[in-house]
Image 1 (cartoon, one colour):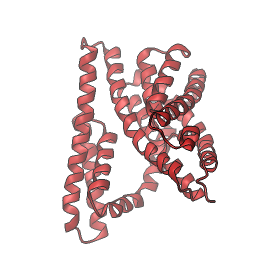
Image 2 (cartoon, rainbow, N blue to C red; image 1 turned 90 degrees about the vertical axis):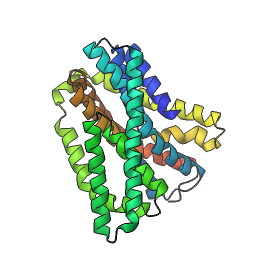
Image 3 (cartoon, one colour; image 1 turned 180 degrees about the vertical axis):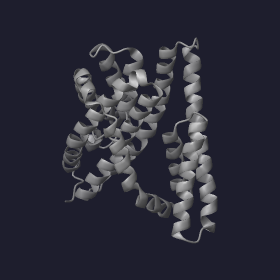
Length: 298
């Protein structure tokens, strides 16, 4: 509900308040669903938070990025149809997007099953790291070759390993050892592709995106908490813990820029600018939510 809440609210705000075409509004709405799990996890570690609220927050943060990628696949399909006027029915575009999501999940799960079967035969940590990284690269390559989402393929791969392998922690530790330089490269490339002269054109759009994504997250999470009869603290404060946004949103904005440059040149700087704001205000808000929920120990 929090993912769909943010997506719907941002889409409507972009369409009615920012006067954006529907296909651009849908892309902004799809990206709005994502949350930055790294920022949230770091705040939880810093405050040594434990409890029902913290468990719920972690579970929600884990699931909304895959939801975001699925929504983006559907939105980008409609955007491509609108831009290129290919004479294909909207239903066929929707069906093609859904099939793309299913195929990406199957590829990722298949690679995860393969790694799970091979892991017992691996003897050294270096071999485990090499094989894990190799399958991630293979999954990304297959996704590009078959026009699937590399993000979704690797999310499915990681999820399969986490749920099916007794050595999942070892696999994650070996990949985590490599992630810092990759994060630096990723954010450097994102910043390097930001055209500062375009910021003045997206001022109002950026403000609307920042404000209404937070509103959507809070409304959606509260509604979902009431529907599921969640803990009272979850109803009150979960939305505040979902404000941070970074990696997946930036990745999707880059994909939009590469695959649909006519609109990606507009979407990308707006998302980069919003990310800076969210990473400044998001962690303090998440910390406030953990304290108010009574889960923060430090």
